[in-house]
Length: 456
Ligand SMILES: [Zn+2]
Image (spheres, rainbow, N blue to C red):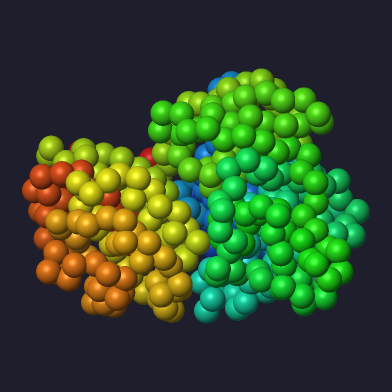
């Protein structure tokens, strides 16, 4: 028999959403929270009969989920998905409610769900996904989840609740790869064999062997702690990838990637730049295969997949082309800085730093990010700084070798917007999470775009 609380829970969520919209409030958590209070088992009910893929991990969740959605769009398959960063259980539940009738029967048969690592055990257990993708495990928001092994163990706990799910794991991340050890699940690994950096990781989030504690060595290294790792002491090593990027050649804004799978090779175009987006493409492709989707459509769709909300987005404000690249932890920040460096000297970077709860209140990670390499390579005429912790950001840039006399600190969003509009050159904004929400909202409204929550 159906849980009698489903109907009141779904009705309440819909009413809450209607009220929030009337109040022009962008909050997305409340309807799901209320519904779960009324009916704690609601998500499991709503997920019944839906083929779900869950994407979790520290970096790349949103891009990977976006690639999966784009694959379904191109395949002409309708689906439900949480888009606007609502990746906690409450937001995911709300998404299912709004795609179901009042009795909790979903109108969609396929779901692409991006899930926060901390919420993964509860969400996975409820949804019983067909496939789970883990992108990587990095140090992130320390004050929320403790050490990286804690994040890894959290994901492992979720995996134990879904023995029937196919696990799609990043072989190049030792923490992620270890999730496939000794589980009853079918496990598929992906990794990058081409495009290795010369230098071994200097700063690593996962320096030591999970089995014996010895320091990992690398045959090849892509970035951060990712690469062809092995333990010289106990023999633990990167699993052989089932799907590998054997060669990566820059092409247009993105790359041409030679894939190797079961001894066969073929090339795909990935429209987004840099090797971390090759990882995202590989994770999406392994998931698509696990879900049983049409692979020729999925592979060719990657050529047409552009930037996504917040992660990398472009707009034009007045005459100024603006790019917004979300940064939220050292590894992600290093990728964004590398990208910024590729734009040359004639851009204005704007660094935005908040320390609200959703940012992880500890902002000391900016000292782990490699701003030094950027300022060793680039000299900017104007540098913008904004946010609650603007002065900390300014100090960090100064230590990294930025010309302090080029730095402008904006005390309001209006000031920032004016500076962007009158920059006289392209602008690249690097905000952390809540700064991104505010800055994006401001700039896109001036550029004539909508607020992010209206995109749903
Ligand atoms: Zn070892």
